[in-house]
Image (cartoon, rainbow, N blue to C red):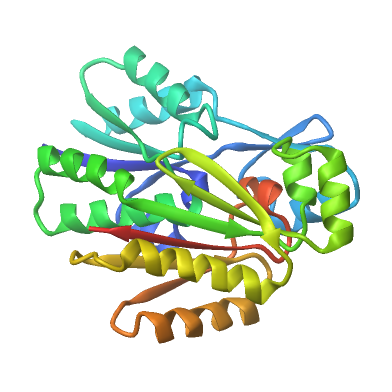
Length: 282
């Protein structure tokens, strides 16, 4: 068996990992005033945020099935026999469906498309655990079983400094966002098993952090397995360090991995100053 991993661009894998392990990355699209750009290739996080803050129409879209098919065929030509393709959640994007459509068109190669039911650092966490298991000798069947278990055990909680990004994404109304911004309301988005819950009761950044950490403490209180914790920020490294310190005080024996920034596609929906905390039980 010659197995390769494939992910979409929202996983935001570092260049070293991609190149060292020959990971295929399929970019989503950022659309600014009707012009489409490939996530992280043709457009940067800074350019997306500048356009968004300036009032330009900024949206996102999944890769076309043909992009996945081209990537699948290229790996087949290299002699790859099996592809483990991980995508962001099907409840957030049509990326998973595009990969499945392409898989059905590609013959003479085994393609396994996994809906992570997560995104950003949550999806990256699932990839990292699976890929490490593969390097340690796990079989394909073991990887598929573990993938299904991990996506049931992964939570990601995100916040942003105001409600404007949620308004642009259509998840809350313009009126609610305007009133919330005037009152200084900060949103907490909980994403688990493909379902989105939005809490707009927090008023200060510290309150947001404390609410998320309390949720994490409650969820992990009786866990005996290995816990993975990732933290990412959007253009606020000082905030990242502050959150890291609080997590280490609460979970002194757990390893916390830090991530600097997010992809342009995720930035469209999160906005400046946002952050995310994700945890998973292995």
